Image (cartoon, one colour):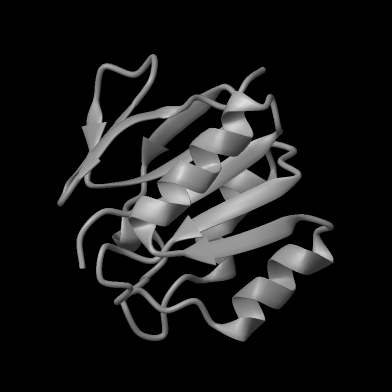
Length: 122
């Protein structure tokens, strides 16, 4: 299954190809996507993205994970979270969300098994 490209991104709004829903924050993986609800794991801007936020995407067999930290990069990504991803044998890229979406779409367009979690506001 291919990783779906992100069709559009603006402040607080993301659309994923092949999905009728729009998202504020989202998770994408080969063959699917869904909203990223921070309340599920107690995530906040600080300390930031937790391993529990990424487990679902990592279970989909991705080789690369792209994390979008927000338009103003307010969302933190602790080194412990990066270590967790690397221990799964997955390459991780952490970028400002607009750059993260471009990187993700580039990899998806090349047929890579890429997943991502993206914060579309601050």
